[in-house]
Image 1 (cartoon, rainbow, N blue to C red):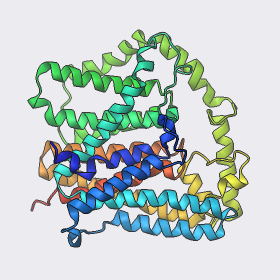
Image 2 (tube, rainbow, N blue to C red):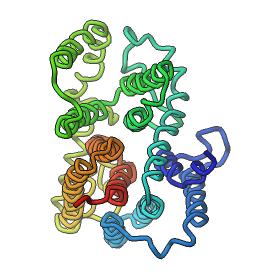
Image 3 (cartoon, rainbow, N blue to C red):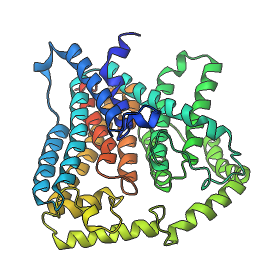
Length: 408
């Protein structure tokens, strides 16, 4: 057990989740942003040096790390072109945290034990945040209270961020559950499933429409993976369950669903300011497109969008942020990254079918679903740094080849 907690992989999710957090958010008067992140990252570096000091010569840099280094250089060049170089440097430093975290993942992910620890780390930090939010969840009337009034966040992070964290906890929990359920007694299975249900409830009360959409797509993709891998077979019972579940849930939570439609869905079509509706985001998207047209080839420079925008914030869309600040060059690099990862996941899926291992299937599915979910949510909220999960799960997938040997 002690060996498990000396593995840096179990702490890397804590780096990702801490984001821009400071100790001030947990009641300690240290006001610098990223202070928690840098402390955990330094701890991971120390553990990596201790564990890998004799094996550093065997480390192979994957395609993902080469991409991040290229992207990092693009950010540096963009600083020269930026109307606000100081803000550009800040964005470069933010991305350097992502690069270091991904390099640590490549160095430490060498066997299935490390991957298990990484997934466990995601579950632990998600569960901690769930416990912090649990008093508010339990104080709500799930059937009658309104999602709009009850939106949950933790430690200064917004509801969108909280919804993403809870989905990651749900996904990692499912991987862990299916890997250990044969060894669990019935009451432990019930407890574990109850925790997963709480993750689902927490996602609902985040009120994040981007998270809902991404979760729906991930759910459909997960079902597709199950069918393609022949790990689930359609029968009369399953078909009946699929058909009866939606109307049953709608009947039980009808008042909640009606209120949610009135308080959240209708706002998609209203020009409500403050960044909480499509109306506000549509203005940001329009501004980003106009900025792109001003300098379509190289963009306006690193972190330049707030300088030209009336919103003084990022455009809440990763693709448009890259387009406005780095132009066609940035879009090409981003497109190559996304497409190459999709091809990589296809190869991994074929490989795990040859491997015929439930654990291999779980790890590949976890990487693909987490990558897809993060990619979708990044089009509705957050900036380049908030999209760090996309980059990390790319590294996760690239390193899966270490534990999925090709069978001739």
